[in-house]
Image (cartoon, rainbow, N blue to C red; front, side, top):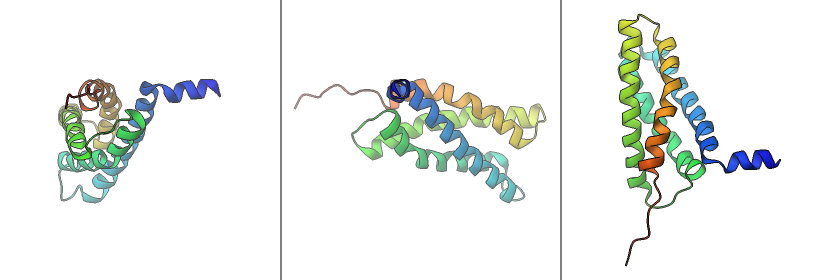
Length: 138
């Protein structure tokens, strides 16, 4: 039990677990969008929509479980979403390269790109979106 408590207290462990959840949510949204809408909507647009929905759904988990931060919700979400936009740009570029250049199937390419995203986002989230604020003078 002590090991589990120690792991739960480690922000990096919470981040990896939440990143896994976020990746599953994103992939499910993307796969559902691809399978139902790909005749009418390009896969990169489906990726943008899936990314935006995932950010909205997972922000409360990152805020309360991973980084345990307070403060304004809207401005915090906007900072979080900027990090998500960087990840989305990485995702779109990697997805395009793997699909249009390397010729992989869209769902396989997306699975490959998803694995790399959380590794990059952790540092951006920790150092900027959820950084500890110093007490401001009145």
